[in-house]
Amino acid sequence: MADLWETLRLGLLSPMVLAFGLGVAATLLKSDLKFPGEVYTALSIYLLFAIGLKGGAELAQTALADFWAPALATLALGVAVPVWCYAILRRLGGFGVADAAALAAHYGSVSAVTFSASLTFLESLQLPYEGFLPTLVALLEVPAIIIALAIARRQQPAEPGGAGWGGLLHELLTSKSIVLLLGGLAIGFLGGPAGLAQVAPFFVDPFRGALTLFLLEMGMVAAQRFRDFRKAGGFLAGFGIGMPVLHGALGVWLGTLAGLSVGGSMVLGVLAASASYIAAPAAVRLALPQANPSYYLTASLAITFPFNLVIGLPLYLELARWLHG
Image (cartoon, rainbow, N blue to C red; front, side, top):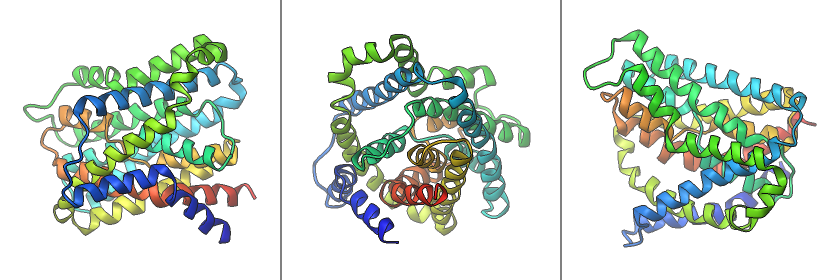
């Protein structure tokens, strides 16, 4: 218990969490602080590409025997999570087909920023983790969205204004997050550690600072969604906290079974617990235009993201430590 409180204290006092809190406070106090849209876009491009680049360089040194089990566990999460999220939202939450599928797509997919925060959190504690973990982000990003939207299409025909499967797959596979992650992975893999060393002064050393700035912006964005809590309702608030805890525990357990280290198991838990707010919203807007954005954006941005950042990271780490004995 003492370790949990110490880990929680270190997490709460990290520059990332404090910057996020500053962004929330600035918005609630009606400060005129805001990021130009171009800066937000540049930071997101930098972070996603840097994640892929570093992961690809590490993947070049990873044996297939070390990678296949975590990859299989990740794909299993990507298939299962949207299915039971949809069922819970429909049967217990009373949500319509479109809203339940939209939320399931968000919670089955992954937040690259929460993933980045988990790596920085582990590095601040000097805990090692597997270098190929960014590859798991790419594996988890798309399948869950496709499965959730396929469930919606099976339950009801596509409504006017919704995209066909060809347009949807094109939107997903050419989205900014996928292109940058997969492109970065490919470049990092082909260049290897020697290639990464050439660009490390830009893509490795400043990463934490860029992430801290991005989280300052995310704090402001999340605070703008607080007003939608009333529309979201109590069930969705409970879902936005309860499901990450369940998924995080499942991810940590599967990571442990797959042979990941304490740090790696914790990160797989974070991937499972996080909710997308980049790839999933774009796909949902295209395929399910009738879904209510107040539900899926409020849940992922204003509930799950802050919870994982402040409480989830230390919680999943302590669970990983416990499972590893």
